[in-house]
Image (cartoon, rainbow, N blue to C red):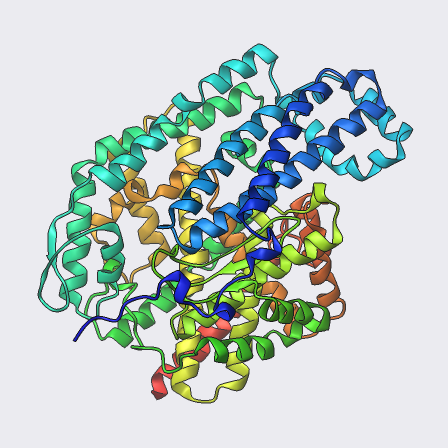
Length: 602
């Protein structure tokens, strides 16, 4: 019997695809837009050197640069969406390559603006704002640029730093090439007893195997390779950390963490509160992994036993049409204004639904100020796909509200804020399923899914964040980051996080060597803070707390019109205080307790 083939792009029904003709009617219109932006770039230079002349010149420069970047973003979005829908299509490969090249040209053409603005005194700039009323809308944008002044070097020094960019990125590139291309992993057995070549992708699948021996062989096979190259990985990681510390020092920041968080104006107290609250609540994680040991009926629970499903296959699954109807019901607590946008997404073909040959894998929400916030999916009937749909819908509605309530200059939002909207939707869906599903098996599955997500997003990512801060702090003190030193600390940290119910497998001590996020520069903490904030916001909305929905919609509409911490305060969550994290832990504990009770009855 022949294996079922994925359909070709041209074979899909129109209503299963997104409608990109709303961006450009055809490729000819795209080419014309490309040419128009190219022509505009030649005009950008005429504004260079004019900012010192007066307020009108500043206003005209900001407006013109905004016009160019706004038009370019439409071009880029169209080309990347067209390319992603069928990556084998040579025409759209070419269009995307053209727009990527244009991106570099745009970036280069406007790179003079911020340095030139910073050459003016604060007094001069704010006088300009008073003289030209139209500049008032740019007040926060200008404040953001001026906040960089203490950390901007001389023009010559900035040029030297820019020229060394490739050198500073060498350790990260070396890690990536070694980790993704050069490492050769051993052959292991899968569940069918077949010999298979271990890889990063297959490793995750094998850890989900229901056969303990398969999990163990994959785990030990994977880490045998990292143990072999741990000194090399310690060198790449150490060099990368030194780069962060070096840049922070020369830019007059107190630490690498302060420098990394400054880009979004995030107080370091946010990071410290996260570590403190999670550490105090580790007994909850210990309870959960102990329950996993009990359900799996294992004498010893190993690190490689933490990902295998403990309840088997999902007892419920959804087709796309069923998922659409479920989303329209589950998200009702978000109110009529929110739901009107969700309905528009379904009715106006914002969503590219099914998998076809050559289509990019996974799912995302994408778009820009002047396009719809499109969603790419690769639908397969499942509960997970329902969650993915409401997750990406959260991003898209966030984008829609931002762009329809803010001027272009504030028509986007930071990564720090992005995942909160999508994860709030997931939490609201979980609340809906738990409020409507009475079958103990279904409830147990939904609860387990939530608990696993919490474990992986809050506890695990906070463990990463703690390790990341440790290695930067130790390097700043002059401590050599040898493989032995890194492994000893990481092994102890892992044992602290997972507790006595999990065996202290020696291999896990070298896990630091295979985590690409340690090269991202204080990025991972945002997964934990975002998930926690979303949990708190969803609870407020579900429980219909006064002003909860209005405050949440205000966050969705704020874009980058204020600093992220201030936006979240208006949403009803002060992330400089530990309260939102403690509330998330209470939700976890409540659901863990119900899950423990259900397990005893199943």
